[in-house]
Image 1 (cartoon, one colour):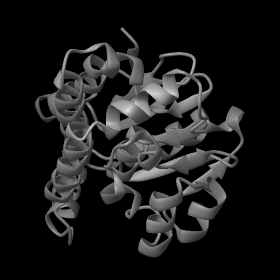
Image 2 (tube, rainbow, N blue to C red):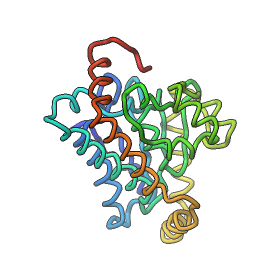
Image 3 (cartoon, helix red, strand yellow):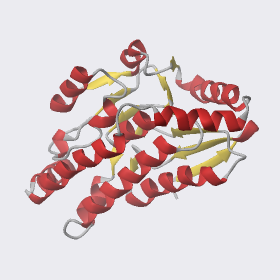
Amino acid sequence: MTIHLETHDNGVLQITMDNPPVNALNIDDTFEIASICDSIRHKSEVTVVILTATGKGFCAGVDIKELENRDGHEGILEINEACYQAFRAVYECDVPVIAAVNDYCLGTGIGLVGCSDIIISVSDAQFGLPEVDNGALGALTHLERIVPRQRARQMLYTCDTATALELHGYGTVYQCVDLDELQSSALTLASKIAAKQPETIRAAKRSAIGIDTQDIRKSYRYEQGFTFQLNLAGEGHRARQEFLEGKRNTK
C-alpha cells in the first residue's frame, strides 16, 4: 500500500502518497484516494483533509509501466476511470481539502490539486501537463482552475511547466513555503478551519460546489474521450514506449 492515512488533532485527516521514486500513481492507489475521500461523508469526526506526498515529487502522473503491462486497452480504460473517480471524490469531498505540494506536480497531480480547495506548495515546485508528450489528453479542466486559460493552453501544447511562485501570483496557490515548513503550514491552516463549527464547514463546502460555474466532471470526461481516441490510433502506445525506452524526458 502506497497511500498512508494519519489523523491529527481536531479531526484533520492526512492522506500521503508514498510511491518512490516519483510518486507515479497506479490504478489501485488512484481508486483508493477516491474511496477515502468518498468515505468522509460517513465520518463526521473528520473536519479537514490534507493531501500530500513524500519524497521527490507530489505526483508525476500515472504509472506508465503499469499501463503498458495491461492487455489491449485495459490499462487506459482502468486508469481513465480511476482518475475520473479520484478527481471527482476530491472535488466532492464533504470537507475542505488542502493540497500540500512538496515537489513537482504533473498530470494526475494537476487533477488532484485542481480539485482541492486550497493549495500550499514549496516555492520551487513545478506544475504541468506532459500529456501531449504522452500521446494523451486530460486535466486541462483542472489546470485552468489554477492558471489563466491562455497560459493553460500554452502549457498544454508545449508541455511547459509553471512554478508555484507563478501560481501564487495568480492567487491559486495560497502560500509558498520552504519544504521543512510545508507540513506545519498545512496543519496550521487545517487547524484554523477545523476550529470552526463542523456542520457549517460541511455546508460551506457543499455551497461552494453548488455555485461552481463549470461542471468539471463533465468537461474532464470530454477530455478523456480524446485520450482513448489517441490510444485507439496507436499514438498513446507509441509515446509510452518512447518514454519507457528512455528516448525522451518529460520532466
